[in-house]
Structure formats: structure tokens, C-alpha cells
Image 1 (spheres, helix red, strand yellow):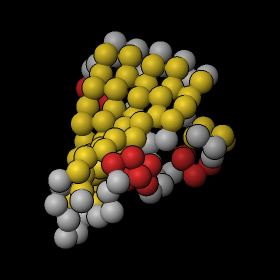
Image 2 (cartoon, rainbow, N blue to C red):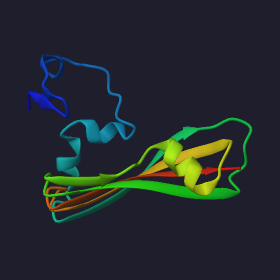
Image 3 (tube, rainbow, N blue to C red):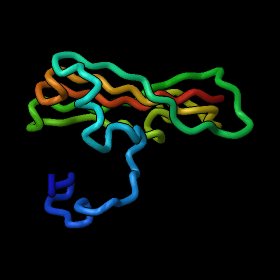
Length: 113
């Protein structure tokens, strides 16, 4: 509870800014939704300007047992994978088994031209 991805963090004790791209997953709220054994969710992201969604690409990172993780779920990685220069919009996909403790995948889905 007092720890974040960078270790002990006293700022998390107060209401800090939520910079998680999937805002509802930055708190304990997902535990109220159920899905302990299996959970999949799509969350809409921001909308780009003056671009059509003719190309699509995804970039994912994975985690197993909170011990091993790999991948790059950045928007820039998805843009380079799909050869996208102008972003129309970005969506996010979360997938977890045993509440993400056994396996967790986070993907950025980018559409653009």
C-alpha cells in the first residue's frame, strides 16, 4: 500500500495525480469489479488530431508471477510496428489471470495513418 513501482513512496499516502493511462486501474477499484480468476478489459484512450484510423498496431508488455516481465507497451513502439505517423486514437487492453498475479498483459492499441 505504501509502495509503488519505484519502491517506498510517501506521496502515495496522499491524493497524488493519477498518471496511469487506464485511470481506474490506479486504485483498488478493480477488485470490486470481480474477475479475480480471469479479467479482460478495453479502456479508451486519448484521441489524436487530424488523422484517420486506417492503420492499426499494438505493443504489449507481459508479467509472470511479478518476477519476470518483458515487452514494450509504449505508444511509440506501436507506432513504429504499424508504421503510423499520425495517431487517430489509442486504446488500452488489460488481461490478467488470478488478478494479474499469475500472468498480466498490458497493451497499447494505436490507430492512425
